[in-house]
Length: 366
Image 1 (cartoon, rainbow, N blue to C red):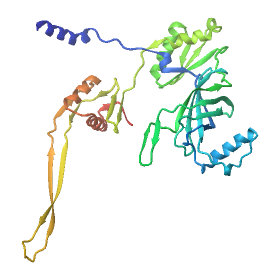
Image 2 (cartoon, rainbow, N blue to C red):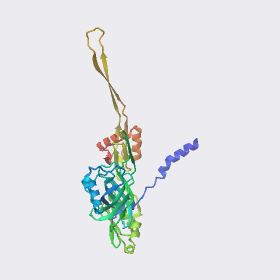
Image 3 (cartoon, rainbow, N blue to C red):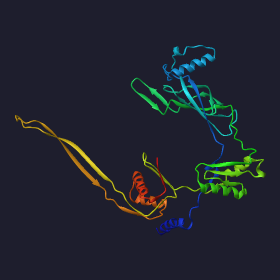
Image 4 (spheres, rainbow, N blue to C red):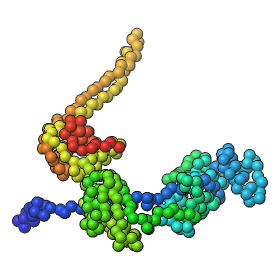
C-alpha cells in the first residue's frame, strides 16, 4: 500500500521537475512554396449504361448532348424524338496535382445535374476537362464507382448514401501539365497556411541557421528565400532541406465552439482574468389536463369541460466558483468540470466570460 502511495506521489511530481518538452513541426506542414499548388479542372459529360435510372426524356440538355454525340459518329437523331432513360448528364471535376506530367492519371468526381435517380453501374464517356483559362488539361473516362445503392419497390424504397454522385478511380489522363518549376530561379517565397508574424520570423531564423542570410520574413504570411550559389544547380535538394526543418509554432489564443453539436475546442494559450462564475438551471414543467363536470340524471344541467393547468418550477442552486487570473487551459477545464458543466453549459459560460471582458482569446462560434 505504501509503495502505491509513493508511486502515485512520484507521478504527480514528475511534471514539476521534468516539464514536457515543447513540440515542433516541419515547415512543410505549416507552409508551402508559393506557386506550387493544385489546379481545379471541370468538364461536362455523359454517363451511359444505367439500368433505367438515368435522366428522364423531359431533360432537354441530356437529349441534346446525346444527339450531338451520335451526330459526330455519323448518326443523325432528332433530340426531341430521343426517349432513353439509361443516360445521365454529369459534371466531371478533378484536381490537377502540382508538377503533373502528360500521361499521369488522377481520380475524377462525377455528379449528376439532371433528374437521374442513380449513377450505379454507369460508364463515363470521354470528357475533356478544362482549367480556369479554358485550356484542356485532361480527359476523363471509365466506369463510375458509387459508394451506395438504391432499391425501390411499389410501396417502399431503401437508399444508402448518395447514388447521384460517384468517382472514376484513375479515370483522368493528364494531357497537359502546368509549369511550376523553380529551377534557375534565384529566389522563391514560402507562404504560411495560417499567417502569423511570429511563425514567419521563426521560419526565417531557422533557415538562416543553416544558410546564412538566405531568408527574410516579408510579412506575417510570406518568407522570402534566396537560393545560395552552391545550391543553384540542385534546387530540389535545397527546398527539401528547408521543408524538413522544424520550428516550435505559436498557437493563437482561440476558443472555437459549435452550438449545434456542443463541441468546444480551447487553445493552449487561452487566459482568463479573475472572475467568479455561477451556473444553475431553471426547469419549468407545465401540465395541461381537462376536467369534465357531468350533471346528475334527470337534472337540467349541462356537461361542462374545464381545463386545469399545473405549473411547477425547479431551480438548481448555483455555486460560485472563482477562477484566478491567468489560469491555464488545464485549470480552466478542471474548474468547469467542478461546476458539473455540460459541453453546452461550457459554451454559455465562455460566452458570458467573454462578454465580461475576462476571456483573453478570440471566441469563434461555428
